[in-house]
Image 1: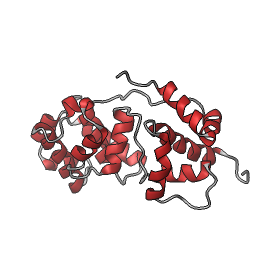
Image 2: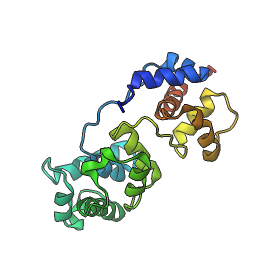
Image 3: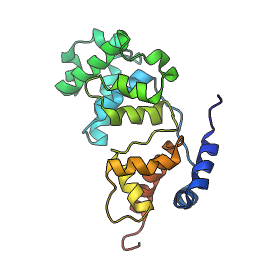
Image 4: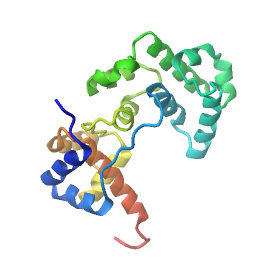
Length: 211
């Protein structure tokens, strides 16, 4: 079955929901840029960036990647002692998590070489056995690395906040409520999720005092 284009998926979401259609009109075309790194490097970066400010995380990430001379592979990570990982700024828990990811890729628990053939649910299940990777990280991997079209990250604060802004809700929807709201967008739930993030960006860009 051929994959639906991003444009066709966005058009279908707009057809189903007037609020989303208007948000699309204001904020522009739906887009997910192609990934710039391999799957293992993307997951390692996700672990590294957790609970760190952007500039600090970026500096540590540059030093981490430099350890491997451009060849960031699971095998290369496993050859580097944990002390060297900590020496470039990784916390003990993140060093252990990245090494756990590498070990599970090598032993096949996380089958990155063939992961495109797996379902979204199986990918989330497989990734979630890695220390430091939970459902949210797996969902971000599905959206931004694999560019899957039917991901609805209801635990993401930005999606909840953006949904409340778009639909003029007084309170943020709870994850369970948002899960139900997303049903009408299947199988293109990534599109409204992405536009919920755009609603947050739009709100932040408004001049102070304007509704």
